[in-house]
Image (cartoon, rainbow, N blue to C red):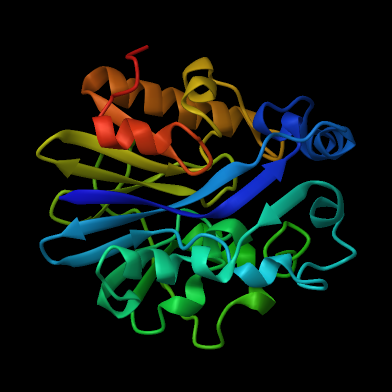
Length: 275
């Protein structure tokens, strides 16, 4: 199975979002109080050429996110904590077409979670089966969804994803899993959000973990550093511990969404150092 990295623009976030401080809700406040922004980070999605059909992991961001009024003005995170740059040609649809495919060729779309920089490109896939963890879907569509940073009012009207229950057995250090296709397994990786999931792809070259926002870089994963927007740093650190254990059990190429070095590691099939 071949995996392609698709960059859908860039995002700059507060430095403290990559490596947070403080407990619970105070953690987010401390992140927003940080005056330092990161450099522009890639917004990556991943296209898997599976024998049964194309599988897309996350949809990246939409160019509409750069238009005035797209984000709710009352939400302090969108006002103070994020700067995105995406052009129409950088959206996931054109990125897929540049590879010689069509968005309509995508059989399944797996969402690691439903934050806008992962769900912004949903409009391109009206005929694909879309999968989201049941916990994530409940939070994003619930009473406090917008307060928690989700933008359900920006999703397509037809959006009706299949809720994933991790009804399968263990996958390495992960106690539960969901077999999506031959060689493709979904595992729960809560922390960044309570319903976050990651996608393990076992190809001939070895295991690849498409890890969403479990961390912002490989180095932060190896160090076990929880991010600055999680409401449960302990859960975040436990997920990172399990990912490191997976890497010890077998060589694993670790690919989070906003790591500038991730496309190079994918091309080189470079596994994370075992720790």
